[in-house]
Image (cartoon, rainbow, N blue to C red; front, side, top):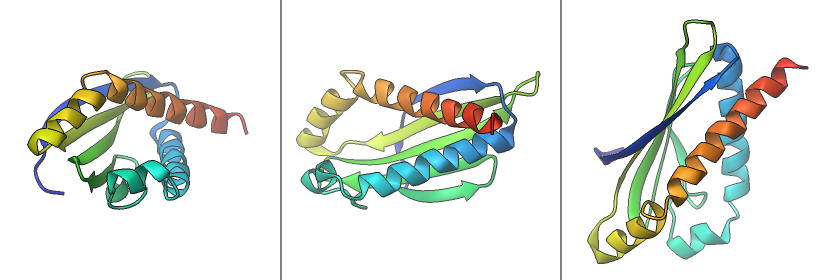
Length: 138
C-alpha cells in the first residue's frame, strides 16, 4: 500500500514459539476476514474490500500486513513477530492510516480519539495469544 501516516503500535508477549504464534495469527486473520465479508458496516462505510481488510503482504513467521480503505480512511495494520530472550514471541501490531478531508478527520476522532482503535487492536493481540497457547495443548 502507499505510504501512510504512522498511528501507533501495540505489542504482547506470548509464551510460545514463533511458529505457533504465526499459526494463531493466520487462524485469527482468516476467520476475521471470512466473517467480515458479510458485515453491514463494510457496506455502510464503502469499504474496499468489503471485509475492510485484505492481506497485503506476507513473510511467513515474520510479518503479515492487512490493508484497506473506505470513504473516510486508507489504512494498514502490520503484524510483526520477534523472539524474546526466553524463547517466547513478541507480537507487534503497527497501524498506519490517513484520514483525508473533514469527514476523515471526524472519523479519526471517532475511532482513534475515543481509544476504540486501541481496544480493538489489543483485543486482536489477546485473541492471537489465546489461539497460540490453546493450540499448544492439542
